Length: 363
Image (cartoon, rainbow, N blue to C red; front, side, top):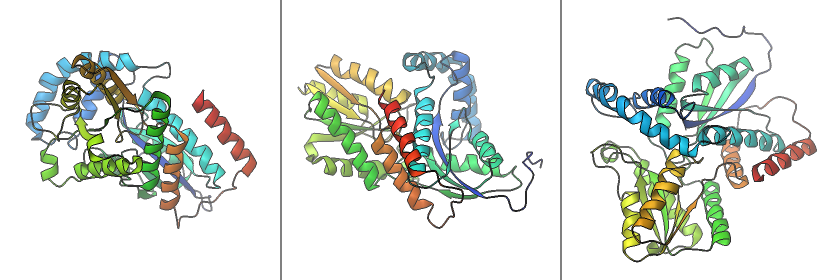
């Protein structure tokens, strides 16, 4: 086995502690070629598609990668921003906010972000952290609800990197935070702020990414964790059972997926006479294709075409102050017992940087 080249070890070198935020990923640009490369990496992961490998690769390369990339590229183009992918740009902003707030809390961690598929890759981020002297790394996958298809796949990427590393850092891993009080409060605060600005509908739909139904039978806790998040958010908002629905989106293929499905639910609500619906996506930390195109655009169209009059999409937590503070509390809890050496930044200077970040987020 050939190990990757690493910076030479220096005796007495100051050890550093780092935080790595990991999100799913995106094509580098909204073109057919870039989307094909991204989908090939994403859909080749055996964590993502759990059917016999040989059969799936024939389907993937013989059919899907010949037909789907152009359609997906058009959808990505519809949400693309001057900064690029909303998911990648939003995760980068969140990392910068986390860095500033950690300084204010006198926790000078190195903060980097990575994508499980696409760039910056997990391997690239870990190489960068190693070059900066990080020998303790807390990994925070930005998936509040644990699934083998997402969270465990991040572990796989770290393991793949470690097989070629000579000096492996000490790792800690935040497995999930679906029932974390700070995360639920941040979600509720965002919903309330939206209601203050836009008024309040009679139904709140909480749409989570779907998984094949068999994942539940195979022992994946994702479905249960989504339901718990939904229940806790409803309790925080003081909603009765009849005033919210938990649904699942992004179904792919012909197999049965976790139900109820989001789009049919939106159509059903509109057909029943409901004139307004509010939709939030608690399983997504950062707005992305699945929220901006599938829900805010396609979901809106489905509801209005079926007789609804008002569709309100409530954006993800993104780099909001409430989201940052909730994640900071998680980080602070999980780095306990680790020394965090290095001169802490001046408190007033840290506060100034945080105020500047908050102003930038608002602007």
